Length: 351
Image (cartoon, rainbow, N blue to C red; front, side, top):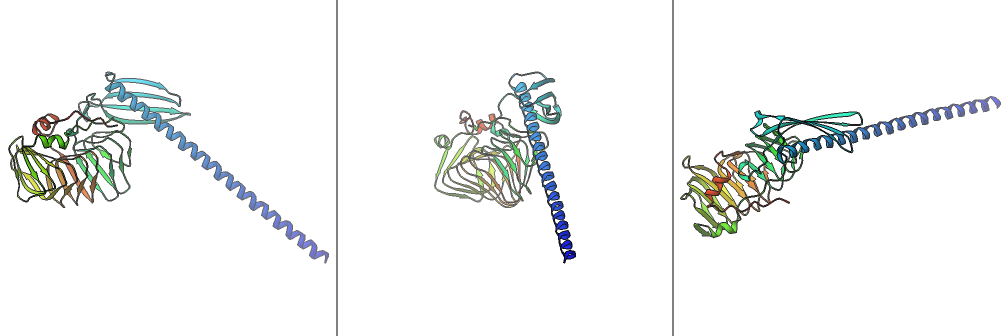
């Protein structure tokens, strides 16, 4: 009996010892995990602060060049409350006449981070017609969407490229807010670049200046020929395809639907479409003209293409697959003003 009791007591001691070992191991693991998580949180905080400091340096360089007209090259050290930033700016003519390179190096808690950006040093505000793609309310590229912009692109809000989406700009890409994801630009990408005012005339003003007024919906399956300077006003929906002749403005109160390809009759022809509603593009076809929507979206089917430009005030660019927009190099603010009969309004600042 005594032997059995001693054996039982020994077993209890062994079990208790094993329990203590297991508990100690668990405590060590939990403590180590908490330490690792704390270190990672600290690293994330440090990284975010460094990124913020670098962006502050880039913003300062942009302001110094554009507003103060500071000559290049220049170097500036900014001693901020959260750390120090050294900013170096130098010409980058290979990216454009007004382009300059900014190297921003931030220091925070003995950690450093360097970011390099190419910025536009032009102090004059750009106009919407300078861009192949101008979207006032932001650009979002979803999964499976592939957008190619041949020319410059700008958003007065953020630009977001989701996983599985692609935004490729053969030119400069600028945004009033930040860029999320990985958009690509062959010249330069610039976040927080400032707003570009919307400078397109209101439809109500164009109705007063219309040279021809069509009431109700209209279908034009063979294209349209107009005299230079004409303002062709459709008080309804318009469907069109075929050949376009002349240098004219087509205004649509409703929606504009391209049912098939459009092309210019000659190298002098140029059309501007100003639409209140949606602009619908056909599948696998090329559309010519500057497409402006004031209160709708541009809806593009698979592999459609626009040669001219797209300007969106309150809507979005909605694509189902591949889409390409290319800027017509003839388009600028002066030419636009001539075509619409001098009806450009004062630019409307974006809040």
